[in-house]
Length: 325
Image (cartoon, rainbow, N blue to C red; front, side):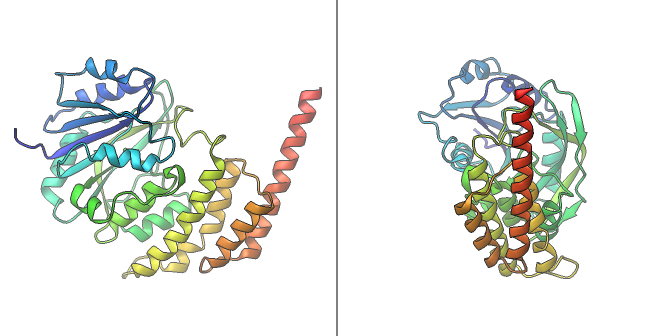
């Protein structure tokens, strides 16, 4: 059998939206792909859902015996990617939606420019659990360097997920796969930067990927793993500092200090979103991390932690008062 040019890889655990995701794959205007669903030992009957789509397109379902994503989400992504050998990979999700001509536009871009770029990107609009559009995310420019991507991400100018990217398998394997952080938090951003280091991110114009803010995915819930995500963010900032040193700015790209000066407000805005607390041991860890980060101020970091601690205390007091009324 002739190998297809593209693998659509869906690491799966949740059943709720999987049928809709597979329907969006089945609706593609080009079918020269193989879709792989990697069931992370889910208790939700994913195999039965996939069986309904067998024969509609080249779908290969694998149920893994052990749940890996709970402890190492990036490793679950990688073992799903390893199910195929197609030269290009579109890493999707079990709850998001492809535009009907997504494969067609991606393969056209690969045919035209795949020798120049290792990473292609689709623009995104965010939908809710019912599929209603919540907002259209800011569009990427046609070509974006890894440094400019980092600067804009830290400044909250761009949203970036995972199902909006497709990459060359050979480049992915050369860089060692996903950059590992706890809960794979920031792993995707670091990996896209690694893949884009040489030639940038090439965005494909046209209809957008629909990323679902369901209240169930890791990006929309923080209660159980806020500490792990905080550790990941600190590890990402240390990784970013090393990445910038290893990939000096080219003409027109932001300098190191321009990228890193956004690190502190980015980190503490994330902490605010997760309602993160900073007990003494955690506070010392954060201050030590910012002391090592070039251009960062531990004093400013301490002030940000103090402000967040006061804000959190006020909110807890308000909640207690509301319960006693």
